[in-house]
Image (tube, rainbow, N blue to C red; front, side, top):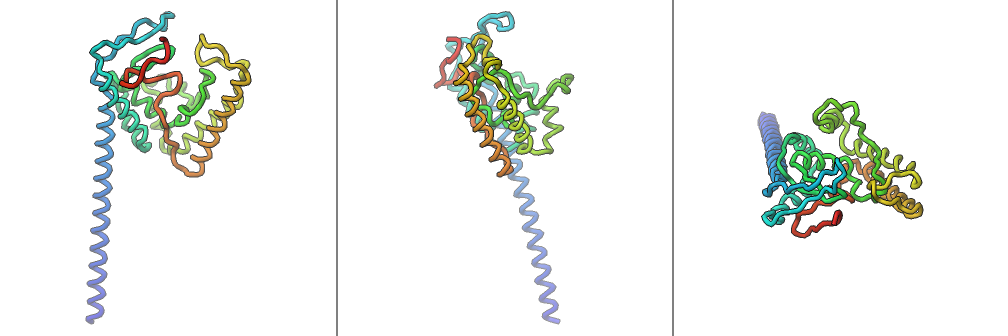
Amino acid sequence: MVGRNDAKITAFITTWLLVGVTASSVHGAEAVERERVARVEFLIECLASKNAAPKVIGDARVGDDQTIKFTKTYDKSAQAVVYLAAKELLGEDEGVIDMLLEHQDDSRYSFSVNSYIDYNVTVSEACRRIAGRKLYSYEPELHVITRSGAGYPDLTSYAGSKHPWAVWWRENKSRGLPQLQLVALDAEIKFMQELDGKTALPWHPDAEPLPIAEFNRRRGENLQTLKAIRSYVAAAKVPYRPKALVTFPNYIFGLPWAGRRHNK
């Protein structure tokens, strides 16, 4: 009888300990998730610049040279906070995408882009760009040899939506970001393989086409990069993390260390 009671007591204690460990694990996971949500919300809030949006001079839609000139009161140091917040959000797991896309109507100023035209980016657009970069994580590592693109995903069926990319993501996120990246990579590889230097549109309407030999060299390097990234995602079954938010010819400026590269 004593042995039987001891066994019952041991079983009870074991069950009690397992319940305690399980409850502790659940509460621990909940705490980690609350911390993650708070961190992401804080970082998104940091995308809102302390500066007022600088004035855009000219209108590219009517053929003007659209440029931004920062005033003396524009605090470039404050823009470092925006830049670093964007970098941190790029490093978050794919769960951040839903939180980013909840900010689709945030019209606060975030940062400015210097390209063949200059323009300002709102917090809403910054969030969408960061979310989109999760899918097109490979783009910052490619040579820009044409202004055409692979066209994935095809958002034409979402034309009636105010935020088509957000709708597309909600409908497809269950497939997982690694799988969606593979589809995007396959589309980009196919596009790059079929691209012809004789007919490809240059990166800017006023740019001269690249010499064919140079075009083919850069195209070959792009294909090598794309296939390497694809192999990594397929083997590791994890998303490829982007290294930058914008790509050439887009360039974030108005930062303490960043001058103007285009439209000088």
